[in-house]
Amino acid sequence: MTDQKITDLFIIGGGINGCGIARDAAGRGLSVSLAEMNDLASATSSAATKLFHGGLRYLEFFEFRLVQEALIEREVLLKAMPHISWPMRFVLPFHKDMRFDSETPTSRLLTKIMPWMKGRRPAWLIRLGLFLYDTLGKRGILPGTTKIDLTTSPLGQPIKDKFKTAFEYSDCWVEDARLVMMNARDAQARGAEIMTRTKVIGAERTDDHWIIRLEDTTTGETLERRAKLLVNAGGPWVADVLHQKLGQNSKENVRLVRGSHLVVPKLYDHDRCYFFQGTDGRIIFAIPYEEDFTLIGTTDADHTDPQTKPECTDEERDYLLAFASQYFEKPIAKDQVVWSYSGVRPLYDDGASSATAATREYVLSLDTKAAPLLNVFGGKITTYRKLAEAALVKIGEALPGVSGAWTAGVALPGGDFPVEDVKVLQDKLAMDYPFLAPYATRRLIRAYGTEAWEVLGDATQAEDLGQAFGATLTARELDWAMAREWVRSGDDFLWRRTKLGLRLDESERSAVETYIKEKIALPDA
Image (cartoon, rainbow, N blue to C red; front, side, top):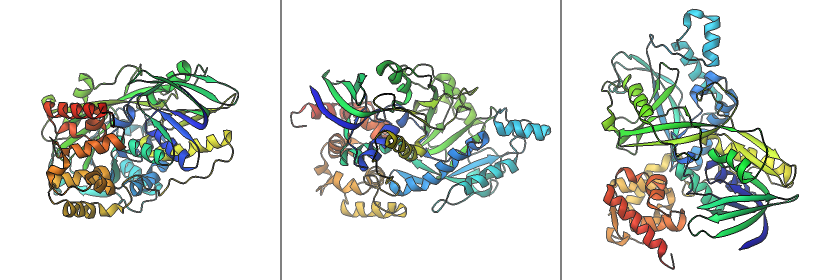
């Protein structure tokens, strides 16, 4: 069936950039359609290290503009989504004998000026970097850097005795896949059409609009949309979309960099994260995860083909385990790994010599030779909102009359409460639904914020929530996710909308999958 209506924008890609642009554009009154060939956030945007951070290590590459923008954004984003984002403190252990084989611009400059410092990242350089980190951004909520005596602090207990000193600084956590979904929900609430499991199979460019051919990957139905401007936010597939689906000639390309992560049972009892520096010049994090686990990551490895699903290789697993074990008092064995995940970062190809050195800056390329085409290259989750604003500036060049920026300070669904009131909401939810387990109240507020009451509805006892699947998950929550969050499979819910897949066994996960499939098959579902 052909839809003859011509919308303002058609967006290819349901990752953070596509959904962020859709939300921003819809909020400015533009008509928007978005197509994602799989589930929302099914690729890069659900496989990040899950941090709103400035990127401390990017300072060594002199990417000051990017770092400053990201640092300022941390608190803007935190205030808009205090349920799925929260402040975290990072502990950076230091030892004077640490050596690094690093070819960053900072390292090369230091070696040139002070050749005896080759291979070192001295304490004064770390302090300088953290001073810049504290001052480049406008901190209002997040505390600044402090120095820690690891010989007396509990923060020194999990790591080796040789580390006597550490620096502690601030960044923020974010539930990345929920962030994507919430941008899509807000876009939809403002009039955008969001189509998941809908693949672009081709597009025809005319002088004044695009004709986009689509396939519903569930039913096989083909459909058509028309739009004045096409946004290619295909993430790892941005070049494939540009060259193969759209048939456009361009020298612009992406460098695909795979980042892998490990999840192990909780390695320590406090709530701080660790920032570890490696002898290869790279860094990794060890982060408290889902209350009972520790997240370790990430790697940087070139990934040649977007069609090849990224997976954590044995080599990457062993690298991360060995890296972390250089710091932790108790070495981490491979049989401790309960889950691993891997994502591909589609970085703009700037010709850098290594995956680690490739720029994290985003590049927006507008082609107005006929019906306008905006290609989105690169980007990082912390700057997604600024990328969307920049994209709308570009779109305004092709579609005059686009109104001004509006998203700063506007809460995402469920995030309409002060950052410091998370515990207040958890206590209120526990009071209103006294049959909930304490873990459930914490989890539901962290997932849904003020919408948790809508999820639970008029329930007065546990039985009112329907089938129990384990780990406090009930049928009522799944019904909400199917009706409001585009959930169509067990994986959608267990590994993207939540991480309950970590807590359910195989039979419980299978029960979730069966429930969703049977519910979707109902005529009125």
